[in-house]
Image (cartoon, rainbow, N blue to C red; front, side):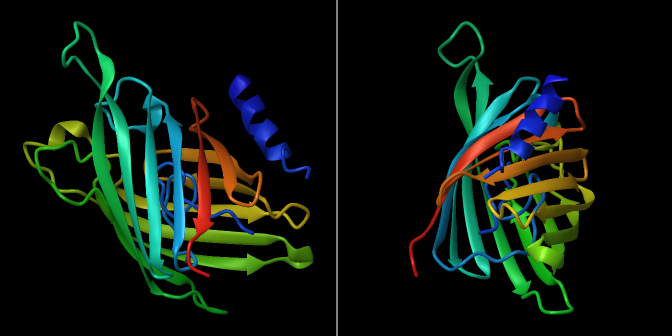
Length: 242
C-alpha cells in the first residue's frame, strides 16, 4: 500500500521540455532501460539514486545507492560515469558503506528518428572485464519512436536487446541483471510537459513510475520494481553549449 501511494503521489504531483534519462544508471533512457533519444550537444546530467537490493545484481544483498555524471559531447555521443556504493569490512569489525564500484557507459545514436522510421542507438554499460565487479556489464541495441497524439500529448516507445557481459572467473559471481529483450513506453500529458509517466520491462522485471521536472534544471523520479520495492533519485541537468 505504501509503495502504491508513493507512486501515485508522484504521478499526481504534475498539477502544475520532456524529461528523458535512464534514471538508475544516469544515462539517457527511461527508468532502467536505454533509449535512442538524442540530447542536445553539451548536455550535462549529474545526480544520485537510492537503489534497493531487488533492482541490483545478486551480490547486493543490501540496499545501496549511486551517483553519476553524464556528458553528451555531441547529439549522437554520450558518456556516463557512476559510482555505486558497496559494503566492506576494511578497517572495521562490521560491514559498512566504505567501498565504491566505478563504472561507465557509452551510448552512440547511429540513426536519427524520422517521420516514419525510429531512432537507433548502440551502447554498452561497464564494458571492461577485469578483476573488478563489472556490476552492470552489458552491450545493447535499441530503437525508439515517438508519437504526437491529439492535444499535444506525447507517447514514446522503445524496444531493444541486451547481450550480457563476458563471464569469467573474476566477474561470474556478481550476476547480471541485463540480458535479453527489454522495452517500454513513456507518456507526457499535454497539460503538464514537465511530467513523464513510464512503464517498462528491463529484461529482469517490470518497472512502473514517473519523473517530474520541478524547475528548469532539476528533476525527481520514483519507480517500483515488480511492485515489491521503490527506487528513486534526483538529477540536475543543463546545457553548457547553446
